[in-house]
Image (cartoon, rainbow, N blue to C red; front, top):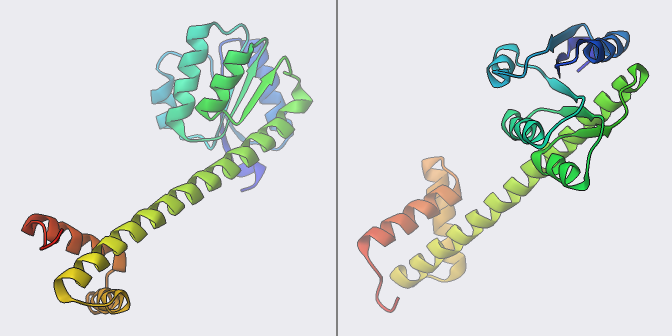
Length: 200
């Protein structure tokens, strides 16, 4: 995605600081920049604008405002660069937990906007990729457990070897054009409805 095609939302109650951010973004080639000065109803505005990236500038954030912005970060699932004038360890940890991609303390300078934005996007993409890979690994592990249970059911009920039970699951999946894990889940569910097998 090129700089010009990104839609960027700047959230800043201070108009002077917002103009610094906007100027830095426009100089970096970003044409689709929307600036919002009022944080009230910001979730609705984000839904309307559908930005690719969000830049939040908090001049003197209090704990409640930070918490509201961190909740927003968790909800929107987009790269977020947050500029604050001052911070403490707890706020930094909360920002990381909330998924803020770049948390910059006392660094609002026009020429720094682009590299910070680029870093926020890269970090968000890397985090999203890791989260997706973790979810895939969890799903794969769950599928293996279900397949093992289904094989166990077939081995007990039909007197099959493990290999034959797996072959039957695979053949049924191919015949029905479904995934082996789906067939295994159906078998496990059906076996649960029919009650425990002999010896279980």
